[in-house]
Image (cartoon, rainbow, N blue to C red; front, top):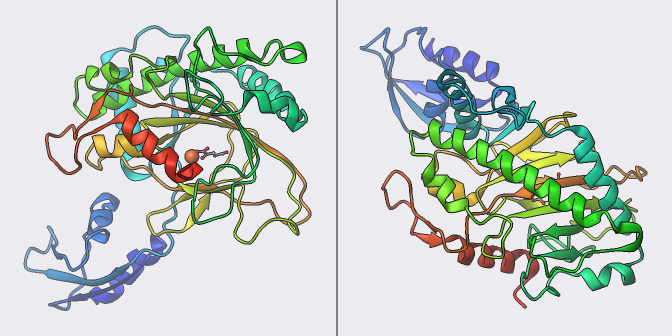
Length: 378
Ligand SMILES: O=C(O)CCC(=O)C(=O)O
Ligand SMILES: [Fe+2]
């Protein structure tokens, strides 16, 4: 029976679906997952099997309760920061892999990027040293206290709500958003803070430019469409930010109702590069369920952010993610380092397929709007 045929597919994909057909027959089609996915995303579709052209199936109601989603792992060795340019064949291969990840999952682990674990550890160690100081010593570096860049600096515990419907996130952050020579940096025991943050920022910037080149290729675009909108990373005319995050031990009795380490959100800009000290990140599936993302040593987790989703007219998807509180009694801390790639403030983001699916917006205005949601309109 066609109905039971659907059921068997449904269970093998961990999805539920109700289907009816206008004829009774068995069918061997829909083996192609890609085709199946696009069917699943559209309600009330009619489907004709290529092996049984007379068979017409109508899917009536569709539920996607448990998409078993894996974040793909892609070897970026051919275009790692220690290599020169890629060959055409390597570019085609990487483009195919990144495109599949960014259109289907929105996240990818990149291995062999050229950024070493030692470099990541150095940023985490110096950041932790900063966070473990008393608040009075961190206060002079607070976000909003830097004249030339409103996003640069320290964000104290519970200040940001990445999900504005929840209490403030149980995390601290330090945003390196400006590399301007006038910026005041921690000194004394933290004399190497500036050098470590700055050099890591520049490494992430180089990797991002390479990833954007591959992404443009995968979309059949001139690489300049993306690259020319990211000329000013590291200046005060571009919102790109290297953010060190510190999640202190949590006393679950004291946490507020609904409070998380990092509330549900999608990122704002182009892409985000994420380095994690341990697991804890959860990524939303299309069904709305959250799946735990592993922490893979030496791999960089890269995700699509909202402006790039608009830019690509939803070809690349920006996916919601969060960090839960640790289980009761688990007093471990967590650290991560995120590099948020943002287009130049003045860059006008229009749909790259020429459609008007989203109105044009300048990257700077868009970012200010998103900050006002997560930090409150003050
Ligand atoms: O700490 C993490 O792993 C995730 C942080 C995050 O998603 C963010 O700050 O946007
Ligand atoms: Fe995020």
